[in-house]
Amino acid sequence: MVFRMRTDTLERMVQAVDRVRERLNRAAAILEQAEIDYAVIGGNAVAAWVSQVDIAAVRTTQDVDILLRRQDLAAAQAALEEHGFIYRHSASLDMFLDGPNSKARDALHVIFAGEKVRPEALEAAPEVTQTARVNDLRILELEPLIRMKLTSFRDKDRVHLRDLLDVELIDARWLKRLPAGLAERLQQLIDTPDG
Image (cartoon, rainbow, N blue to C red; front, side, top):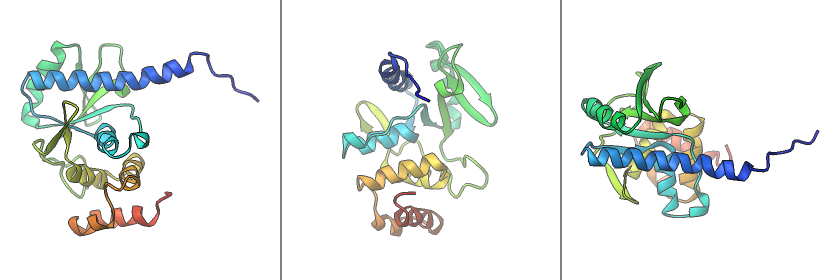
């Protein structure tokens, strides 16, 4: 059986990537204007760091993840909703949908600084002040980003960590910088580079 793709497939693929980038830039600009501290985390932060070394190794992501202080949530909600985002709390997740017809995939997902995402997490999320400026965005610094990814350690986190290993932003020398539980996870990835 031969599957025929729509003729506008490439255009739709580019549009999907552009929508995520536009949502990220718009949300960051709104938070900057409202003087609310934030940090870009997740796949977009990994992509920003990887792009500093090898643009061809950058992986796209479908959502936007940000780090906020819990005490800044009300101010962030007011600022973002003024520009069309819609706050939702669902299944213990805080997010801002990108308009009334959007889905959770089209959202700005919030992680709270200094708090554990799950009770069993090895570490709490880092502080929102641990950022580096990359293309007018506040991107989480590399070490706290790595610690977040090692703490979550879901499939996509392992893929992101392998991307960082592939461009040599992290390597075995990092093992000494990490607590035992996170170092074990990094060693596992170093030992199994192909998954």
